Amino acid sequence: MHRHLFVLLGLLLLAAPAAAQSPCPADFQAQSAPLACTCAAEAAASGQVWGTGDYTTDSRICRAALHGGAIPASGGVVLVSPAPGHPSYTGTAANGVTTLNYGPWPASFSVAAVPTCPETFENEPVPMTCTCTAEAGRIGAVWGTGTYTTDSRICRAAIHAGVILPGGGTVIVSPAPGQQAYRGSAANGITTTNYGPWRASFTLAPASGALPRQAPAAALPACPADFEGRTEDLACRCSAAQVATGDIYGTGIFTADSAICRAARHSGVIGPEGGPVSIVVLAGQDEYFPSTANGITSLRFGPYGASFSFRR
Image (cartoon, rainbow, N blue to C red; front, side, top):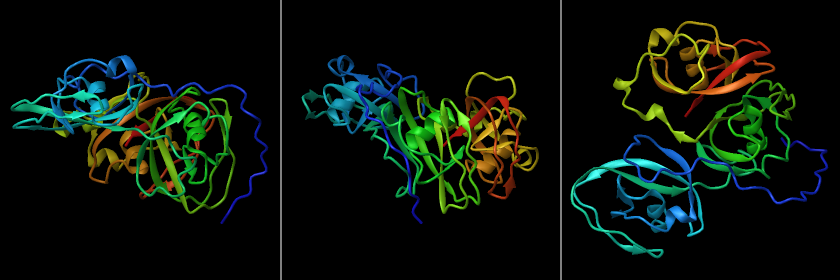
């Protein structure tokens, strides 16, 4: 099924600024989970690196990114991921950077380029991490709230959902089941549109900073009943009993008084037995729309002054 858009786009007269993203730390020693960040040209120009492909955690991240071909010498956005330690690291010369040999080291990291987000999620069957430019967030139609039709513009939906600012940023886009109805709403300066049945959907989460749900599950505290009154992201563990009870309001984005673990199951980030989740603070929404997913039906509400979603 094809939708015809009767939208006349104005000319973009000004160049769009680069996507907003936190600068990369010098090294990966204080990190234990994937990190999306920006390397400046200056950060890639100096510092020691040990290894090839997998680098010791005390290696300079941006210099390693240049060596591995994840960025040019001018810098760029990268995804830094933890890797196991190795009994030895081999140095090589690549892209103008010479890395060093080293012996055993307890932990490593790898670096990959973060691609620019495609316009839509129509042909993307698996989760992706990608970067939205400011320009990409200015144009295009979006259908839904929290959960969007796959032909919606990804970056415009990301601003609407509150996971990036209009200046851009890096997002995690995840596939979701098709819905029988999508409700439009106005949020963060963008108005989305109602639509009927659509075969597939996507949801969004921010990718900036470390992803705490990657921490060892045993080290995580039990999740609170809800997210009311919290102003910082939270990593915690849901039990099966918490998944089984409680009311939730919204789809993809939930009111802060929704039951966290039941919302996590509705969003598909954990199974019925529970598990670790990473909860993201979001702005309040004008309306929260109901849906049924993974055996759980959420409720309608709105407006509500605070929200949360999940990193995936």
